[in-house]
Every structure is written in structure tokens, then in C-alpha cells.
Amino acid sequence: MAIDHFVAYNAFPENDLYKHGFPIRFVDDQILQSLNKKNERKHNYTKVVIGKMDYFAITATKNGQEKRKIHLAWYPIKETDDKVIGEKKKIKNQLTGEDGHFIYLDGPVGILVPTTKDDDPPDDGDTREKHDHYLVYKAHTTQEVIKYDFKVDDQFLHKRDINLEKKKRPLEFFAVRCSKSKEKPDPDKKPNSTLFNSNDHLAIYKIQEHIFDEFDKKGLKIENQFKNQTIGVGNQVYLFVPTVKSEAD
Image 1 (spheres, rainbow, N blue to C red):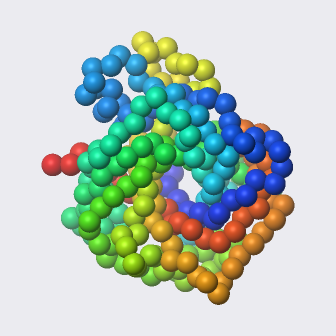
Image 2 (cartoon, rainbow, N blue to C red; image 1 turned 90 degrees about the vertical axis):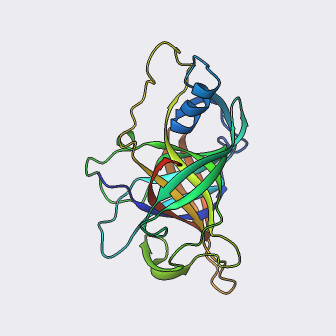
């Protein structure tokens, strides 16, 4: 299954359930595995404390692709046992050109959780359990994207033009597929959740603010592993672009 594009909106929890944060989770991804190898550590997980939701990323289509109903809720990581600083990677997507871009990662700073909403299409067999979580890292690059303007279609604002931030480099975050566990994993065993497609990740680009184009939706009912929640959503903030990564030369 090909990875989706997403458009992230500001999110505002409306009910008290998990309004102030979530229990500890244990996570693992290719970036943290690299850190463990460098430090010659045996375990393959890191402990994180998750805060209340910051953004809700809804699937977006380009060029008439089929709409899907599995979205991503973005929760900040408030505390973590392990983090990388200046981890260098090379990425390639439709905005980098054939040569790709070198990026530097700090974090993790957030986690993306597969999520459904109550007004999605009827069940077609595509469930949250078939989609990965992602760890979000702050990203830095000195290289320019090759395109700033897009036509996208999502279920909130439908077909519209969006523009990436031009005052500075629009790439702000990079999200890497991860495995996660509620309980502390056994370091002698493989991670207990599967990466369904470990080659594709998400580059997250800042959308230019539209001062005269405000959006506000209240009472949106969503569901994920943290059960049912009600949120409000505001303006578009980020565009998620499917991306492959490799080790930097």
C-alpha cells in the first residue's frame, strides 16, 4: 500500500480525556537503533512521555488519487530517555529533485498515531492496525525545495492551492516509521509491532500562513489507541510528503 500525503491542521482537544497528556510508551525506529549501535547498548527501545495533541493530519490527495480514511494524530514528546542531535541523513522526494537533500535530525520531538474520524467512509477493511506509527524529528537543511505551490484535496477544505513557507527553508520535521509498545519490551526479543513499509517516511513542510483564509471546525470525533476524543481543528499548518531516506555519504 502506497503511503499517503497528509495536510496537518492545528488541533485543540475539547474533552477532558487525555487532555493533559498520556502514559509512558516505549518506541523504536531506525534512527534510535543507530544511536544504540553507536553507544553499544543492548536494548532497542526508548521511553517517552507523550503530551496532548498538537495537530491532526488528514489524508490528502493529488492528481485524483483515491481518498483514504486513516489519518494521523500528532502528539508532542515531553520527555525521552534517548535523543539524537545533528544526525545526518539523505532524503529524496518530489521536492528534493533527483539528487536528494542532506538533512540533520534532532529528537524525537513527537509521535504520529493512526487515527480515524466519525464521518469517514464506511469500513472497507482498511483499519488503523494496518498502518504504522511515526516518530517525528526536528529537521534542518540548507537546500532549497524545487517547488513551493501545490493543488491538494482533503476532506476539510477540498480542492485548493497551498503554498509552502518561502521566508525560510520549509522543511521543519521528518517522521520515521516506528514500532511502539505499552509495556517495556524484552531487549532480547525483536520489537513486538511490525513496520508495514519501513522504506517510506514523511518529510513535513511548513505551509505559508493565509491571513485572510481562516478555518475552524469544532466537535470532530476521532478514535485511536487512546480511545475516543473530541477535538477542534484550525488552520492548515504542514504538508506531509512521502519520502525515502538513506545514510549520508
